[in-house]
Image (cartoon, rainbow, N blue to C red; front, side):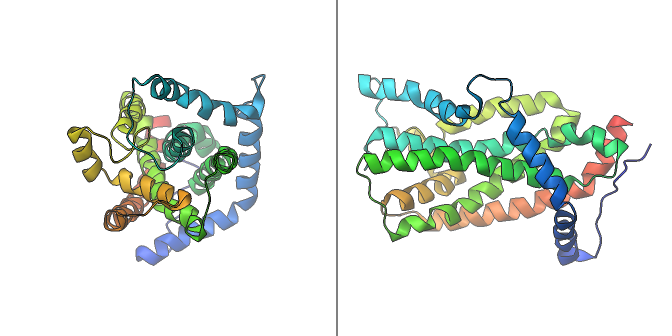
Length: 280
């Protein structure tokens, strides 16, 4: 049995490949809107709180850190703004990154039946997942900005660079999700291990603590972790802290772009063949 939608790699070379991806997204605009609407209405459909979980989830995830900080057990390092605001913002950015992995990593499995039974291009599913994660990020981020303003945090012109400087972090999150969407179809255990490993990765990134944490071990990890720069530079720009790691940021951004291009090429050259072999 053949997959209904073969890989639409029209055109030759690098430019032709990306023109094909863009053309596919344009052709499937209506399908993307329908998929996005269904995802937005169904993600919390069976819960009492509904879309309020977009607010409750981040609050629950940081509660333990606030308790440890105020009790004196946990020392995250000196922050230029109140720790409540710092961790709210940091966790929002971190969840923005991780959610791309979690949303996209199951995209192939979710779409396998459609791929086998009806003409369907994976660009539509990927774009729908990306848009869903961006929307889910905007709501808690807006609330966090209100909280920061209430705490007396002022935003300057540099704050306008917050969203553009998040793009490399987004590309890296998408790349990880897209790559493991192929792994998840064949080796689900590996996907589960990586899914749990994201929690460990958070502790190796200055999310719940600052880059000035006392531990020398963490300092070394922070310096070689590219996510450090992709997360901390946008955060520093937003709250008006001086950015001292532009070199690390641009190196990490270049790495994120390279990985994104490599993974997307690999994905669209492989996904239809993998689905055909696994689900035939």
